[in-house]
Image 1 (spheres, rainbow, N blue to C red):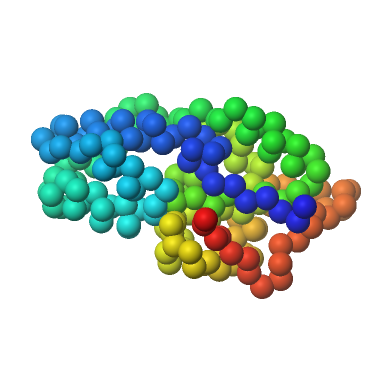
Image 2: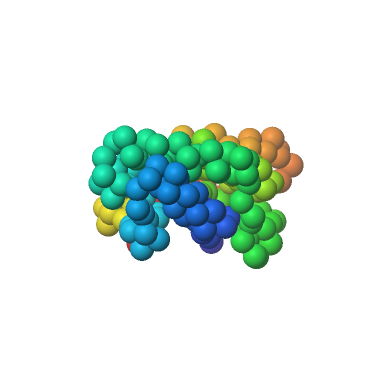
Length: 184
């Protein structure tokens, strides 16, 4: 296997239910209706797209801002530490032992990815991170967005591999030009 690319929310960590509950609470606090089925339209989308959908669902920027502030307060109060999904830590450890480079591509922002994976102790398994704030179009687009090779050098796992390169076989490199985040 040349590399493994993971989504984060819902696959590696159980964050989607808490985020849904926070937004439903935020909408109630803002005095606007938001149904679970309506909110589910934004799951997996990058922030600019999900924000636009939520602005429309909530009736405009004022209600959106109020609901978002209340949702963030709920998530920040819980310190936004989401549990790792069953089997994820074991899979990441097995891939690391096999020296398979791993990456995470998520609609969450780069900073959120680093925070959430760091909080549960698995950030060091990833050689590259691509957040929804770093791609031109996030999910559910069918067009692939190039991911620069330089992204592979910006994580703890990449630094660790660099330090051990003299004593261990080099990991397989990603393609020379770019590789793509291709949501399905």
